[in-house]
Amino acid sequence: MNLLNGKTAIVTGAGSGMGKATAQLFAKQGANVIFADLHLDAAKEAANSTNLETVIAIQADVTSDGAVANLVNQTLEAYDRLDIVINCAGVPQSFTSIEELTLEQWDLIMNVNTKSIFLTSKYAVPIMKKQKGGSIVNIASIAGIRARPGLNAYCASKGAALMLTKALAIELAPFKIRVNAINPGPADTPMIGKFLVGDAAQKEEGMKKIFQDSVPLGTLIQPEDIAQGALYLASDLAKIVTGEVLNIDGGRGI
Ligand SMILES: NC(=O)c1ccc[n+]([C@@H]2O[C@H](COP(=O)([O-])OP(=O)(O)OC[C@H]3O[C@@H](n4cnc5c(N)ncnc54)[C@H](O)[C@@H]3O)[C@@H](O)[C@H]2O)c1
Image 1 (cartoon, helix red, strand yellow):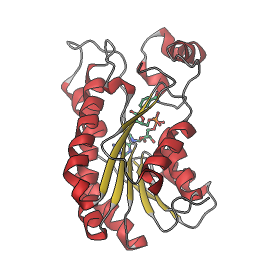
Image 2 (image 1 turned 90 degrees about the vertical axis):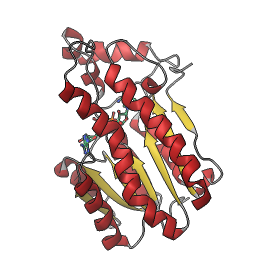
Image 3 (image 1 turned 60 degrees about the horizontal axis):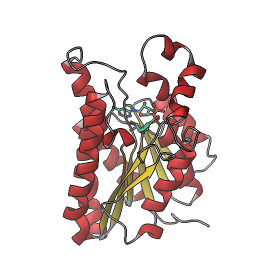
């Protein structure tokens, strides 16, 4: 079944983890896919491994107004339309008390995890309005609804991403542009090691176990689990769903 035939999708953070799995699944499901990432080599490798000619890798810093404008322009030049944006690029926070958190750390986390959604929407929405429809999916986090000590900026950035999702959903509903979010729980991607500091971070298996034990279903979330949820929300299967938040977290958010 090709759920995304005829669609064009931008996936940010497509060089690694959930973004990579999502972009690859979308390409298999018939979409033209732009693999966007800060790291071009990683995006290219992820795109090339699909062995499909309907994919392009583009270097883009999602915190930069000019880079995001360029990303959307290049998408239009290549495929002449834009139906789906998956905001998956993100940065973690290693446990830091509020008095030790620097302004630079705060700004980076807020810019990559939240401002990026503003920027991609700013440039994608005018095209979606002209096309009379579209779907935006923001990859937030269970940390956006369930605070943990030392993750102050990260939790704030994801909480803001969730409220921005709802604000855009209500603003854009008259234009048939749907905006939804996914809250992943602890996932088996390169990011997970970066949430901890000290000895635990050195011992990857021990660290994975700590997170695994925090998931009621007893396993880490796989990038493909997130990709499947993003496919549902981006496709016409969810044509009447907007402003929703799907926890894909093994019960972590309960
Ligand atoms: N891994 C987890 O446990 C977990 C849990 C909940 C939510 N999340 C969220 O899921 C999303 C994906 O995380 P992941 O685990 O796949 O991480 P990852 O580190 O594997 O991938 C993140 C990607 O984002 C890219 N990126 C970072 N800054 C960027 C920028 N300024 N511009 C463009 N690209 C940039 C990186 O290069 C990388 O390829 C993130 O938003 C993350 O916050 C992750």
